[in-house]
Image 1 (tube, helix red, strand yellow):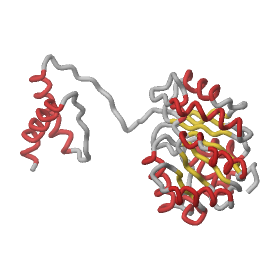
Image 2 (cartoon, one colour; image 1 turned 45 degrees about the horizontal axis):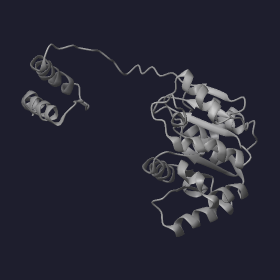
Image 3 (cartoon, helix red, strand yellow; image 1 turned 120 degrees about the vertical axis):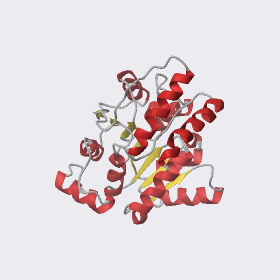
Length: 270
């Protein structure tokens, strides 16, 4: 597929690879930027489909896309989901991390060198490996993705020092098109991400964070007794509507107290 892919062609590939009929808001704009070879920063709320903005270009283009992901569990879930629900079972996607044996890691690097992978997830610590550096240099790397990109910003809520090594690694491999995605980034954090990754005239795609299906309210109570009474009255009403909920407390003792209140309040409902 050419870099300037038509909207019709992208929709066809979306259906073919992921089984979706339509793109979500701003997904197509970010995907087109990726296919055009541009640096791109994508800021979208959780559940908006950020991952698809780099997974689809990886699936339909040539070469390999390397994705930096901060957690082993996260990259494992991404790959399992891709293999189960998409055409990536045939296309080629893998993760590389310390939970694998040395032989498994070597096998994956061999697949990268042979051009048999489209998508490879790694942790930022992997960038310190000389073997990985040489493998990436020799591979047909078309895109470098930084997932949870707010981790690179000292102004972010989840700063990780290992993310600061990404920029040096990019310089060593010739600074390929860089694609950064995050669900949370203020303007200050966005600027920090762009600066730290040395992104060149990046396309910045920012989605809305309004959730019309969510309602927020604050009810103040004078003391624990009043708070417990309010909770006891509210729980049956909420449960009648169906669904589930979460109650956050500060201590284990409060957890036991709330559990007792909930059990008594919901007992009449069976």
